[in-house]
Amino acid sequence: MAESSKEELFQLIKRLGTLITVKMSNLFSISFQNLDLRSIGAVAGLAVAVVFTWRLLRSPGDGSQRRQQKRQASTPSSSGTSTHSNASLIPSAACLSSEDSRAQNAVDEFFQPVKPTLGQIVRQKLKEGRQVTCRLIGVVLEENSPEELQKQATVRSSVLEVLLEITKFCDLYLMERVLDDESEKRVLEALEHAGVFTSGGLVKDKVLFCSTENGRSSFVRQLEPDWHIDTNPEITSQLARFIKYQLHVSPVRTERTAANVFSAPTLEQFFGAV
Image 1 (tube, rainbow, N blue to C red):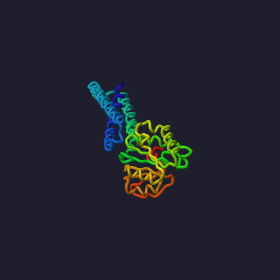
Image 2 (cartoon, one colour; image 1 turned 30 degrees about the horizontal axis):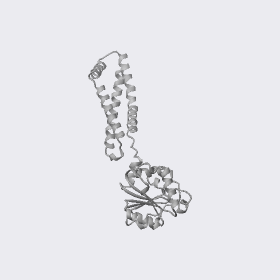
Image 3 (cartoon, helix red, strand yellow; image 1 turned 60 degrees about the vertical axis):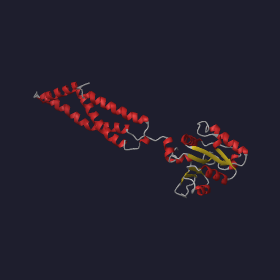
Image 4 (cartoon, one colour; image 1 turned 90 degrees about the vertical axis):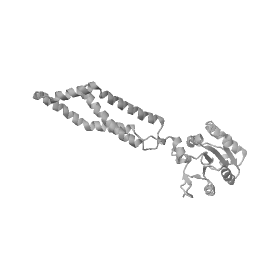
């Protein structure tokens, strides 16, 4: 590598070091909850690479060559040589701004904010709640009434990923009002076919059925969850005094009935999964 190229690389590494120092100070002021091990490893790897390259460029041989070159440049010489030396300095000065820009762009690209995972978002939104009860109709299932369940039961594909994330760290109970035993069987088969029971976080014994809306409210009161998710505004209003947090799922925007009651068009939209 030519001495001028080494000098340019050395200056670029110095700029990178300055920019990285600023970025690292900002980065570590952010909560480590938004960083994963891969991100931290990448930062450490970059820091090691920068230090190694800087030490390589600062080797004694290079230093003596730079000192020798400096002495040669200060020695009087012919006018042709002086003109050549001055001309070589012009492009170096002109490249300073472009090198700064490249260094800034490289560091900015590396230190892009780490996007939280769906699991992290779910935990944050549920405020680390450990027990959740959730209605099936209109939230997990496509159907919107017990009468529809007498014909079919279909799990909404868009909600499945969120549901499985909840089961990873929450004790989840699903519940619904049904009109007959066939509807109950149909719902369980739909959940099993969708893979809800394969993750290990949810079992069939935690899918509860009742014959009235008050029965579902009674289930929630007995379980005393941290969160209850429902589509019925009356039940949500009744439980507001007893349940820590609730999510009212409704395609129509409604007024917030209590400070501990949130609302969203769908469960997955509440977690920003769509």
